[in-house]
Image 1 (cartoon, helix red, strand yellow):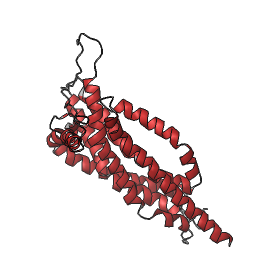
Image 2 (tube, rainbow, N blue to C red):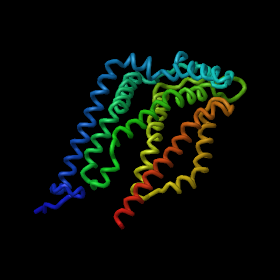
Image 3 (cartoon, helix red, strand yellow):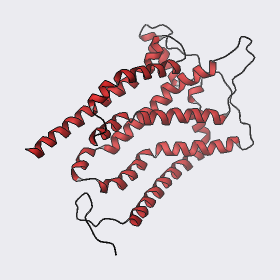
Image 4 (cartoon, rainbow, N blue to C red):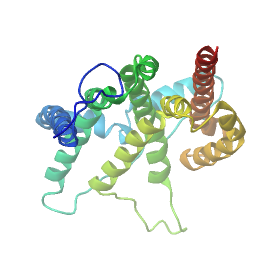
Length: 285
């Protein structure tokens, strides 16, 4: 017979059994999947508009990023440094069901991105009861901040990193005879675009991750400061590979937000560390 014991939060509620936890997790997952499905259905219905104006945006000659970066380059008296030639490629599918299956891929990935705040909210509802009251005080607005940094990173990947990447890879050639033509498949393009958007979305969670890891004692502001020089080298190398031309201005466009993100993580970690020290002093006094 299971004993009724108090949970970690000290609310007086009986602790859930392992089976109860599995049942709770199952319903959280079901609701999250339903949210993705609802968004996916909407996207699939309007798949033509979504593909023409969103999915194919980074390889569209009229994409806003090309004109915006070029106008900024002229405004900042940088000449044509940030002006990228629009990508001139044609995609293909190699199977009869290629476009049909790609439409499903677009729908489900888009559904996940749109439903991300709700998915994280469901995850948070599952984790929250296991936290102590003092731990909950440090999680105010967590859903907002996690969603904010995810969408900020996704936007950076879509509007900045995506055009740079496809512009560079689409125009890169080997050999002097020009006998090779870049004609990617639709699946290849979708895989690259998905990796860029989701990768940047997760990478921009670094400040939130730094806050959480500092709170549980795995990292400190000092550790992040000591490893900053290595982070700078890694970010510079990534920016050099990403940018379409070897000039330093276009590389800085990619380097700057990533470096600022790391700096923000140090600030967030430092604030969390000071709060922990202050509470420890109050407990000991």
